[in-house]
Image 1 (tube, rainbow, N blue to C red):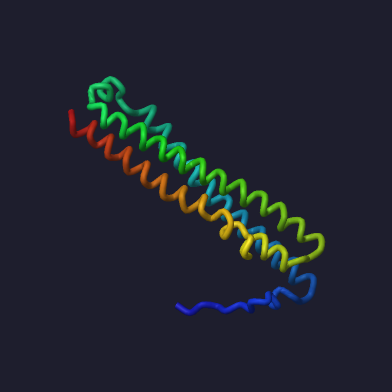
Image 2 (tube, helix red, strand yellow):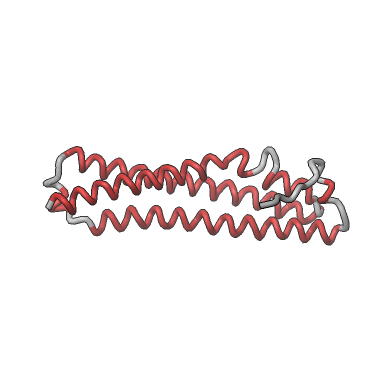
Length: 155
């Protein structure tokens, strides 16, 4: 797959004011889609926790070995931590979006790009929230699934 090369000096963001404003509006649209995508992860993670807590037969759960019950608690905690990291990333996107929206007034496409995708942009500075959110949610879900399988297979 070929990649598109952009000038390092951001000279492609120069041009008529109308094009710069369109670029900034496009960035805002992309940021909005990213925000909705990550909020979906928050919702799924929290829903998973709620479903597990409300649907498990606790009378059978207390009969399981302590290690399995602890595993369940750890899995739920990891999933919750993942949801929290996703939410923190959503907050960072929201704040960056406010900054990019402010760039509309001056049609400063260069600054808008820096806020979103530059060296001090959202992914470079806070992308770890998203990456660790994925890891912790996946690990937590796996640990919970292991615990639930012990419950189901254990009788």
